[in-house]
Image 1 (cartoon, rainbow, N blue to C red):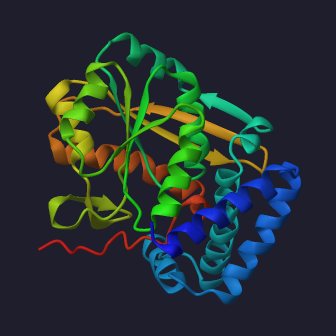
Image 2 (cartoon, rainbow, N blue to C red):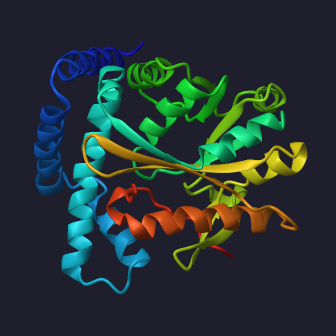
Length: 284
């Protein structure tokens, strides 16, 4: 492992030790201060995020755009610190569920579940809940360039029982999750380049992964959208929604769950990760 990767791993383990031993209120306070520092002094991807928010909400004035942007920094600094602090940070939160009955009914079908989410809200909290409450949950993860960071975050997510398949590994492993009646977790809201399928996202064509729709078509495993959004630093809401796939092709299915995710983002715009270049690939 490269020296820089070792240093990253060591630094993250120190953060975990520090933040795991303080109260949830203090973690929230510290994360808010860090978020303000990042917002005011570290402009990495800031212009991109502001541009994305403007594109999604052209009706908003500059003050509204800036408020969303600022709160986005605060939210995701808090999410990061909560992830670093697992499992202690998970112990003191309250979660209100909606749609769990749908999840249970899908599991009874014994076909597995294609489980879709996005970079919205507290998706790490969502993963923790799912891994604690279903027999098998496997997320498809992107391998990070920094091995120290990659190993640390994979370990944090697996504390509750989540398993991982790294993107690029055998697709047979993913189909086996479904044949074992597991939840195959896919984060399906990033630019998928030329391999993706174009669907409307906030009124603009966006290249979107087609994997979720293909897994459903090939296996008949039901599609389930899961989101977790924050009410405050201790209260969260998890919603599960079935994706209607009847008489729909790959594009129709992808558009359906993209619409559902967009609905939540419109309700809580500062809980979406606007830093991605979501509309990078242009439709030709």
